Image (tube, rainbow, N blue to C red; front, side, top):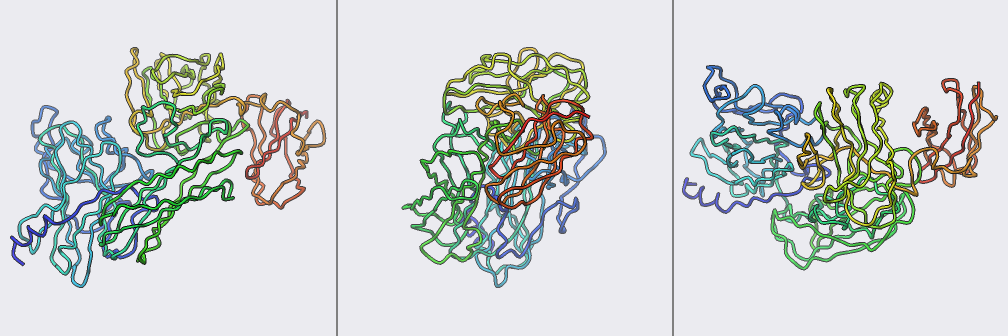
Length: 595
C-alpha cells in the first residue's frame, strides 16, 4: 500500500477516551502488553536521543540523560509540578518529565517508541493504554503516531488533556489489520517551557470482536455533577451516616469496545444491603453507540437505606445481539452506611478510601479540608477525625474546624498538642479525633470539615487517599489561608450526632445482648453474646476516650449463643467498653477492670 493511501487510512482512525475500568484493561484478544511495575523496560522501547541537563536559567551542563524514565507518582511530583494520581497506589509508569530527577532538560518532541508484533491474520486491532496528560505550565500536545516499513510517521491520535485523572485510551488501528513491520510511538513536547510532563502505562494491543458492550465503571453518585453545587449529595462517599442518606442514585459508564455500532441495549441496576437485594431497575437506551464511544447512564433508584451496613451496587449491560465478550458486562461499587460507635466506620461521613496514599502538610500553618454535603437538616456535628501521619512532630498544635460552603467559620475544637501517644496510634493506622466545642446542629447544605495545623516550627502531615474532583478537597495555606483545590481526598472525616463518637455515646451499661463476667474483671474473663445470623465477628475493647486498646478477630461464628475469652492483663484498672461486631450487628457492655 502506498504512503498516500496509508495517510488516508490514518485519517479514518477513531480515538475514543474511556473511563478507567474498575477491573482494568480487558484481557480478551490481547497479543501484546507492556507495563512498567518491575522498574525495567518490559520490551525494547526506543527512548530517542538523550537530552542535555540544564541549569534553572536554561544553560546546558554537558550531561546527557534519557528523555524517558520509569517511576512512581511520588517521583513524578517534583515540588508539585507534575501531580500524577497515585492509582493504583505505588504503581510505576513511563514518563517524560522535565522537572523531576534526573532531568531539568529541554524535552521538545521526545518520543517513546516500540515495534508492534505482526498484525497478519488479525482483525479489529486496537491500541489501549492509559495516559496522564495535564498540559500545565506551558506544556504542548501529545500524539500517538505509527510508521510502516520504517517510513514517515503518520499521526493517528491527538491525546486529549485531563489535568485530574489518568485517561484510558482506545485507539482504533484496524486500518492496519494484516500489516507487519509497524512501529508505534507516543510523542510529547514541553514547548521549550519548564512544563510538567507526560506519562503512559499499561500498553496493550488486542483484537476486537464485532459486538462487545462493556461496563467500564460503576458509581454510587452522579459523576457528571458539579462539586460546587450545594446540598445535592453528588460527591463520591465511602462512608455515609444513616441520618444523612438520601434517595440512592447510581450510574455506569458503558463503552462499545467492539467494531460494530450498538443499538438498543439495556443496563440493569441492583442495590443490595448487607447482601440482600433491595431494589432493581432497567434502563433502555434508544441512542446508538459507535465503536469506541462511551456514555454515562444514570439510574435514580428512589430507595433510601433504613439500616447500617454495606450497600453494593451492581450494574449489568445486555445487548440485543450476542456479546462476544460477556466477561466485561458488569461492574460493582460499594458504599458503607455508618451507625453508632467510635471507630471510623461508624457515625462518620468520609470521602477518602481509607488507605494511606500520600500526605499534605508541612511546617507551615495549613488547614486540610474535605467538602461534605448534608442532604438532611438536624444533624449535630460532634467532631472531626483525621489521619495524622507518624512522621509529624510531637508538640505541634492542631484543632478540628468546620466551615460552611463559603469558608465561613461554623465551629472548632479546642487546641490539641500532639503527643507521642498520638503518633504511636497513627503508626498502627488510628486517626486523631477532636471534639467540637459547641457541637452545633447543622442545616442542609455543604460544609468543609478539616484539621488545622496552627502556627508552629515543626512539621505536621495529614494523609490523603483517593482522587477528588476540583472543588471537593481544599488545602488552605499560610497566614492568609490561600485556597488551593486538591486532586486528592484528605483522610478527614466528620462525625455526626445520633451516631456519636466516644464511649459516652453508648449511654447504657449494656445493649442487652452481650454480657461479661466476672465483675470486676481480673485477668481473664468471658464474653457471652448471641448472633442473629452466622457471621465473621470481631471483639474490641475501648477505653473512656474512645480509643481501641484491644482487638481480637473471632473468626466465623455460628448463629445463636457464642462465647469468647477476654484477657485484661495488659489493661490498666478502669472503665472500658467491650464490643462485638458481626456484620451489621453490634453488641456492647461497659465493664470495670480491677487487678
